Length: 217
Image (cartoon, rainbow, N blue to C red; front, side):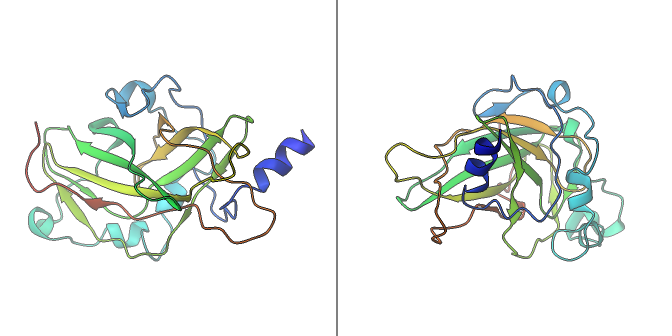
């Protein structure tokens, strides 16, 4: 397995200083949507997304526990729980150098919930390995999601233009901010490039932000 691990270690963005959720989820989730989070979102063990979300600084639980705006002014709005979110992944790449996979969280829990910070994200590969994805350092802002509203974040990655070689992600293991349960989604995009040391881009995630202002059908 030595040559396998060297190949994965050469993939762009494997500077994973964070220890995120990498537990077994429901690997039968669809390529672009998870319509039944409860079935595929079992409790994460070890050092998972909950540890990442609990860090101080940007995206940490200290920030997301602060009083937010609107409905959260009385501090009674609970965090968005994995079981109450519809989680989906889509390839939104429009450029030849930087790829974008968007992961969305739709509130289907029947009441308002609060979401803030960075999700925990691991990628599983066709080589049988799993690696964590770093945050991009942007500031995370607290958000209130009403029933039917959606928040999302982007996974950005360098496009593989090698014409054949590369590391193929197969699944995304996602833990919503400040949660301890994960959902496993199929990776909807292409391969990651292998580099011999040249800087050709980074693999990283953005903080979660609200993308809809009214309930969606």
